[in-house]
Amino acid sequence: MPRGRMLNKKISYDERISELSLKAKLLYTWCIPHLDVKGRIYGIAEYIKGNVVPMIKEIKISDIKNLLQEMANLKLIILYGKDEMYVEFTGFGENQNIHEERESKSIIPDPTHEQLMSESCVTPQQVKLSKVKLSKVKYSTHFAKPTPLKVEEYAKTISFSVSGQTFCDYYEARGWKYKGNVAMKDWKAAVRTWKKNQKSDGQPKAPPGKYEKFNK
Image (cartoon, rainbow, N blue to C red; front, side, top):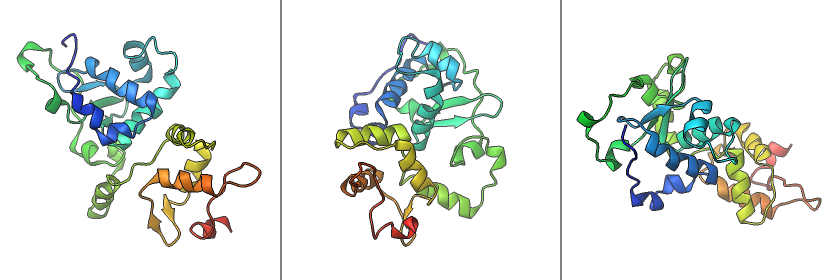
């Protein structure tokens, strides 16, 4: 592995990366110099903490699993493996000038076809792909579920205090859909609506009308 990797300036304008929480952005960029010739790294939280962000106190071992999942939800990485987790950065070769003959071969196994196509990219042995499930995978690229941390970080930018876990649990129970089975397209808009309809006691509530059937 070389001493470093290229960080293309296009990263500043990448919409998916801009959707990451601040911690996930830092972890994503700091992982890049540690990737092997195939753009892979071990996905073990302790390994990543010890090798990628050993001096960053704000990123704890307990945070790393959720931060990686945040990246995977946006299709920036592929998480795969069963007994041991691995990470592959998508589009790695497009932004690197790789000379495979000068580098050590990757010792991390390739993801299988099922793992590449799986919506979660985790334990795909349990996933039997069908035309219906494949259509769901394609659809999922249009909306990435936020993590509780991302919800709270965004809420702060609009001077709103809300429990990210409560917000995510609320919509997870409803399949991230509004009334009339309408799929959510912009979770930030939902956060703004929660702020607009905040209760007088300071606790957020789901907006009337659009969500009323869930409040009964």
